[in-house]
Amino acid sequence: MGVGGCIRGSDRKWCVGFTAFVGLGDCLTAKFQAVLCGLQFSWDKGLRNIILESDVLDVIHALKFGLDDSSSPHLEIFAQISELLR
Image (cartoon, rainbow, N blue to C red; front, side):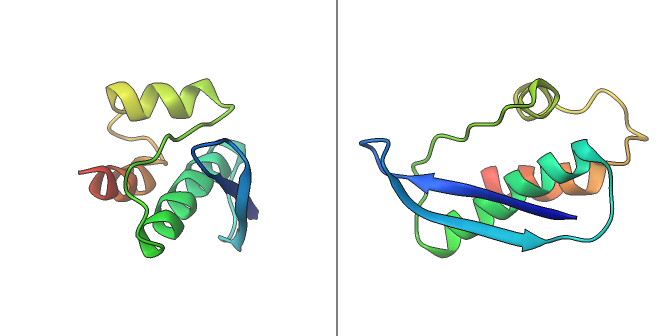
C-alpha cells in the first residue's frame, strides 16, 4: 500500500511532495499512514506550525476526539500520530 501527500507553504503553494510504501492494509489504514508520514516528514524538515488536512472525516474525527474503539486496528498508528502531536 502506498501513501503520499504534499506540503504547502503559508501562501498555499506546493513546496514538496512525499510518497511511501507502508505495507498492507485497508483504505482507512492508508489515510492514517499518510497522516503519520506527512507529520514525520514535516517534523524531519523542522516544520512544527502546520495545518493538517485530510479528505477522510473518520481520520479528522479520530484526531480531534480520539478513537472510539479500543480494539480498533488503527490504534497503533493513531498512538504514533498522537505522540507526534504532543
